[in-house]
Length: 171
Image (cartoon, rainbow, N blue to C red):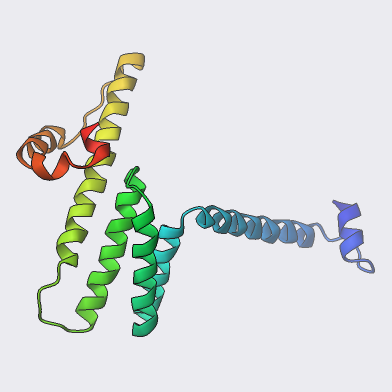
């Protein structure tokens, strides 16, 4: 570490605390960079964050075009993971919040879509967890309790016309 310190701080006496602080800040920057790189692979996630920022700043014209960009991105993508349903939920959450902020007293379908996508996200994640619990129970003999599973399965049967159209659930 002293060699690195001497290269960076040429005329200073070695200070261990200072170099540790520098390494710590460098690590935090690297972590931020990795998050940004990961987000490049998820444009829908990026777009929902952009919508949130634009809504908070009351940039209506930009919000509308960002919403259209999300819809364009989404039209090209098949909903194939629970993350996709989460992104759709977040998108409709932002649209709904935008609608509320405009203080409109009219019908808006986004609150229904927001609810539906949240249900699908939750359902898929809950079923994945239940399967994982069952698999681990078989391997390790551990006891797990998957709360609400029975009521969820009943709900799936009851609302099968909506849920069965989703490839992740019907598979």
